[in-house]
Image 1 (spheres, rainbow, N blue to C red):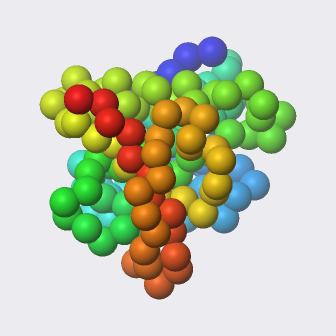
Image 2: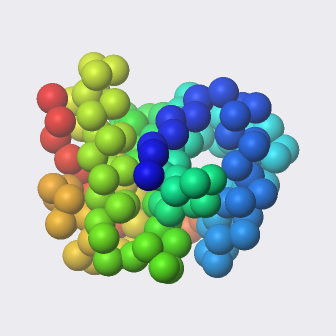
Length: 149
């Protein structure tokens, strides 16, 4: 298995078809953003991080300046976290979160954030719940932070 850190639009687009095949609505939305060159417009600067096994998606996430919480004081964000069903239970999403946190720390950030409706997942990876608020879709999201600095 390998971790691919894709920051260039053309590299990200190469994976959009495989991301679209994932059985998750947000994956299809991410694929649309990549294919329409709107990923950076929506999320700011960032990376698409993919764990792959011989070209097959195991897990992926993004590390970006913006996410679904409209707050310019909170960044960077880990988002679009997905693990293929046949690979679940091995903490691959945790490995990607760890990779993203390490990258953010190397870039000089002191915190990394996640917005989600999951309870109990991100706490396993060292994130702490800091509150809930409405996201850009007017749905309540739980916000988690991991101190990395």
